[in-house]
Length: 211
Image (tube, rainbow, N blue to C red; front, side):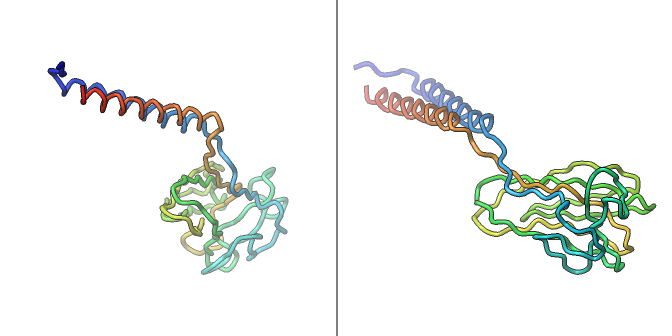
């Protein structure tokens, strides 16, 4: 009866093949995914107003202003936007909650800019359990930022923008969007093929051990 004199080499070889197939399946999933838009708001649907609450959002612990479109239009040509420190010397927390699926990574993208009025601002942004703090000088131009979050379980999670301080000269917010990846149909086929090959390797190794 013939037996493999160096079983460890067979194990290492099989383990390497499995690792390669797993990497192939993961690569197929990530490279074949498209971004789906869960939420998007450029604030243009809101009436220009001081100490206002944008549609669909909540404001707590203070106020924000909806400005632009010719009224305190610090960034002409960008439609309406939010001054995160309203006109009450008490910056509010702008927030909205979303139903998210556990295990899926969501990316919140948003544009922030300096107040343009001579002061600096610190903005705390949280998305679920993810958070990041941004410091903006008065003359900082509009810039796009992204904050990712992967919930552990299905549930409702909030996206919140909170400007520290309270001098009625807040940072500017516009173009908020939340996206997540959706695999393309052919990606599932590649993943299934990779898993099938992985199963074949496992069966071959089992059969070889019995020879």
